[in-house]
Amino acid sequence: MTAVVRIAAAQYPIGQPDSLVGWQAKVAQWVGDAAGQGAQLLVFPEYAAMELAAIDASTAGDLHASLRAVVALGPQIDAHYARLAQRFGVTVLGGTRPFGLGDGRIVNRATLYLPDGRSGHQDKIMMTRFERESWDIKGGTSLRVFRTPLGMLGISTCYDVEFPMIARAQAKAGAQLVLCPSCTDSLQGYHRVRIGAQARALENQIFVVQAPTVGMAPWSPALDENYGAAGLFVPPDGDSPDDGVVATGTEGQGTWVIADADLGRVKRWRNSGAVRPFAHWPEQYCGHNENELAVELVPLD
Image (cartoon, rainbow, N blue to C red; front, side):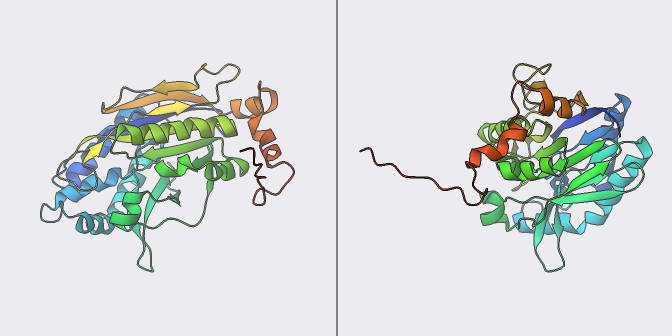
């Protein structure tokens, strides 16, 4: 297991590729750029694969037709990311994509590709209003932590990171680093995810990395506006930055944000930090089971 991991988080500009080959070339250039800077773990954003809907102009502007088009390209998307991971010797969290399950449901799937050809996936658990009410994307039903040569990794996609029990479960299962691919159509949305990412780093005394889509894509009803900046966040304790921000990019720019994460610090934070929220977490339940905590109403009016 590698102690220090060089992470590249994409501020990925949504483009309008005119062919699968064009998209493959773009992603290959991005992976090559990050690998050339020594990155070992590359994180692409949520729904980055949806730019592939631009290939078919007849359906690109139709929300549900574009969704089906990208679902159909799933095998080619997976194969390309897998080849790039092996070619450059890096671990890649590919841009999440809509994935069709056997029962007809569509989920938002994040897939991790290792340089030895292995892969694993995590489906987004919590659906936003847009996903629920307009797009009919369904939530996943299981959480995973991936034991990799780089360390123990969890994935909390966008809205997921705003819910503390998801990252808490991953941290309890051993995650030292949580990957948060995101896609937000407002600065408020971006900051909600970023605040969630920083809170999860604080609560669990772990690393959290956020990678967003950026730029305008007026041709796409799914990705029309994209705001955000990539960042690596830690608990503000000990030798960490005072604000818990190891690195962050300039909002809206298409670029990699690259930073090193010494995963051995997780154990040090938890054992000798100024505070120990990961260990003290159960105390907030006042001796009750986590699902049975009662609140007493005291009338003082």
